[in-house]
Image 1 (cartoon, rainbow, N blue to C red):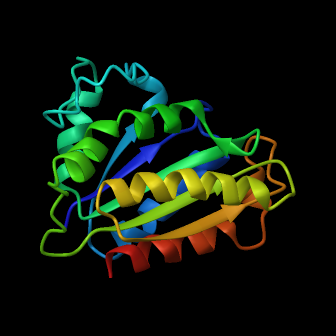
Image 2: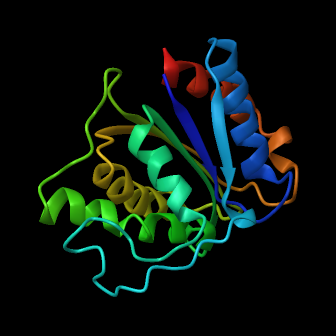
Length: 189
């Protein structure tokens, strides 16, 4: 089973990364491996809405996203981990999602959805935000849901934690790290 994870936080060793690491630990405890991509360290241009992918399903931009297309295409489990900024996913996460417009064209215009593969495709959304209003989780999930459905992930779980702002504060949350570990384990079980 192939599992990939996208870290959408710009903050090194921040709450989102700590949560993702615990999720990965859960996956590894189940005997699986994870390929992780730190989006902030990659050269990915934003979608130009040029229409270049409409007839082929292939993005015409040439950057680090090219490697991620194949990873997404062949993954059985996909994790997106993002902080919530201004009630939305991080810019790093959103660039990844927007560049999946080529998958949207492939699925909806060309009628060639990504195959579900032998294990089916499942997703996990990890969200961490300093605010205390649930709307941050709801807005982040709405965007992620469109992403997951576009890449033929019919179901995904959301694990969101609010009121967690200072770097490392997720370690002080009563259950976050344990929930992340268990969610990782469940994702590949």
